[in-house]
Length: 191
Image 1 (tube, helix red, strand yellow):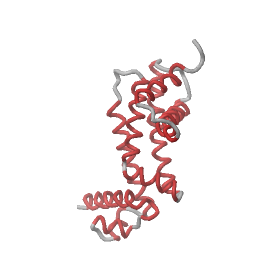
Image 2 (tube, rainbow, N blue to C red):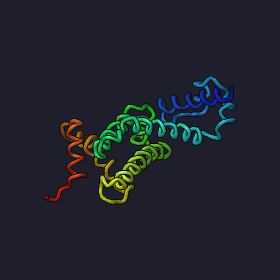
Image 3 (cartoon, rainbow, N blue to C red):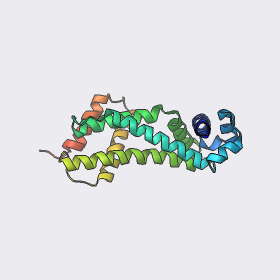
Image 4 (spheres, rainbow, N blue to C red):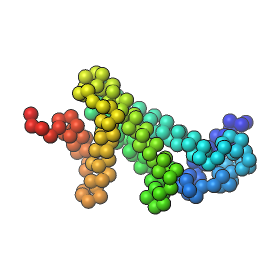
């Protein structure tokens, strides 16, 4: 029974954080949404921060699972890279908690919301970093610093998909894939 209560608490907290954000969520709200006493929450979690971290860990695991679904060992590194980035950023843009955290960071700058967004980004970079390391090992790409390369790849993808459309016509996914290949695989130097 305690496992069910813990799960109810986590589910209720996830709903509350997604609806109200980190700052506006209280343990009273979580208890009410979860249909448990506030004291029950404290038998499983010491405070709101610990409960939030549990939810963030689950979000990151779900995001990794979503990324793994599109990786195909038969495809080359750049095909997989585009698919993973596309899927992960779609997930991030559609996940209610990630949306609310981004909104809270923009509007209020709540430190825990910022930490949550940074945790998501670190997870994405870490996943890509692992894939970069594998690709270097297979000789698919040149030896490089996997973490920095993963960071640049993520930021380039975000620039092409999110930042570009702020002042230009959005790029179709095929064009984004083509540009990733151009800048990352081919480079700017003439042959």
